[in-house]
View 1 (tube, rainbow, N blue to C red):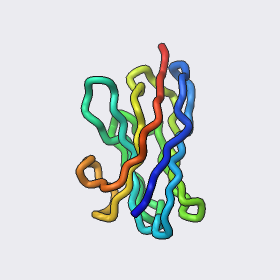
View 2: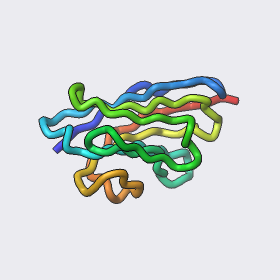
View 3: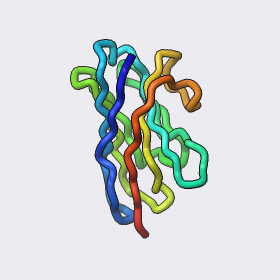
View 4: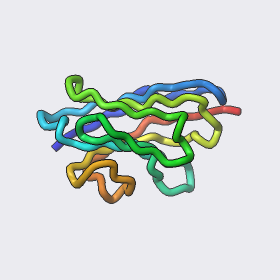
Length: 124
């Protein structure tokens, strides 16, 4: 099993940057593929980024591609989401998630472990 704790959210202005962190417990963290999802009020939780267990391959939806970068540090048991050029529509609670079901998965049902989320608010 793995336990996940997100941090780094906050209130920023449009165009600013934020870096989210997700710290994991568990000796087998390096075996997990990881993902970031977000959920805005009244909306479904949506895919934001995914990374392979090695940290070498990433995937993003078009809505954040070129602005967000996900990374994984197996030595520190952590994943990160660097968010640049933030927009008001990026406002949401951001969750990190872990899975052993496969790599670069983009559906929430493919992930077995979730953090509690961190709020990101982007003002216009």
